[in-house]
Image (cartoon, rainbow, N blue to C red; front, side, top):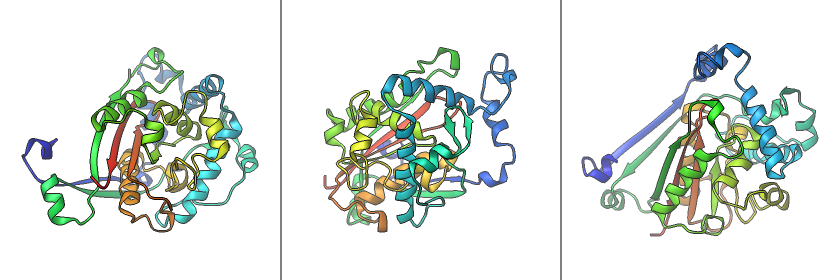
Length: 292
């Protein structure tokens, strides 16, 4: 906004996670719950993710095995990302054998916390052309915060993600996301969230995320690669910096600087979609392009 207003022409954006310093992560999450009706229930707030996952699976035609496939895909993708912390070879059986912690969420369905920092440089169009030979253009941005009251949410859909992406698409002039977007970095702090966010972002029709996943559509070599970086499941959950992490990975792919996890086909437009995580319902989206 500062750049668009003309106040400045170059801005450095930094976000970081030093979550290893926090010994009471679950208590911080609980503090975001309503202090009268929800917080006294006790327990780790991730039980909300378990409840939401069960509702999502019921409504979406996705299965627990599809969620396990997301884990396998992203942890495998992360093996090629030198900045990842949790890349490894897994099978869907490995995921399904991991302990059930917040039914039906299993231990491997949940991204592990990690420390890290992201820095990106933004500039006006004129300045970008002066200082960079291959700039990435931000053509659409969107954001949304759903109700903070968990009792008032529509648990059958990620409304915050729908609204944020639609805002970004409108700004970018995108009318058919499933064909206009070449690849995406989608929030996957929980395995089911990748599938839920894919549908919310209209990258496939409702009820088709699991089917497309099984067909390989979202693989690194697929028609619409999702989380080639490894996402939060493979790289680690950067908490408040997770959104900028998704955006950074889109920029790296568009510039051809992603290294070993670079998408092989030519990509010209990508989507980054973030979510602040349990217990909030806040999301942000950005569309980036090259060759404009």
